Amino acid sequence: MTYVLPLWTPPALDIQGSDALFPIRRVHCVAKNYGDHIREMGGDPQKVKPKFFSKSAHAVVGGRDEVSIDYPLATQDLHYEVELVVALGEGAEIFGYGIGIDFTKRDIQAEAKKNAMPWDTSKNFTGAAAVSQLTPFDKIGEMTEGAISLSVNGEVRQAGNLNQMIYNVREIMDHLNGYDVLLPGDIIFTGTPAGVGAVEKGDVMSCQIEGLSDFTVKLV
Ligand code: MN
Image (cartoon, rainbow, N blue to C red; front, side, top):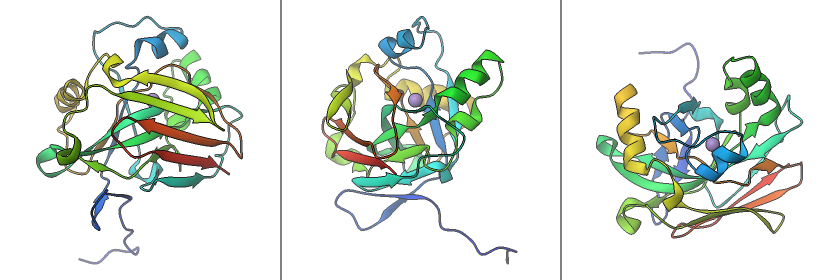
């Protein structure tokens, strides 16, 4: 088989303790999964059905402990959202976990919400999915609790616990499998706690989840 373009390599993440890389197929995201974040966005937390959206695998930047991201086009209100990221390996079983920032152009998202239109351009752009290196499942097991936090320039902005998730990792996977079967290489952003806010060029975000290695993202 030949192609009319040179083939590109898949976006990939480093794996702690391994020289191999984790290739990314698809990026699934839970829209609202912590009650205090739903309330800060003007919503009413209810356990009815999780809401999902997706990003392109090519929106992923990172795979290491530190990464720089260019401030994106067409926004004056870029928000961070720190999230536990789950990576699926063989058989779409949990392969490992990372720390992610779901970057959101909040001004574009607000306009889309107001007009009941898709919010894709606010969520899916180069650098919109910052992800750390992965910690393998066999090192850490199920992640149902543990502190999750994000600081901007040393000041804590988000501080929650994974046990505040309305839908835990297994429930999220069950729901996603009901829409379209999960595949090896898929990663899942599991939602963000309260405290989201804007960042500017030059800001440094440091993210922590108990049990995982820290992740630092610089906006340039
Ligand atoms: Mn999010």
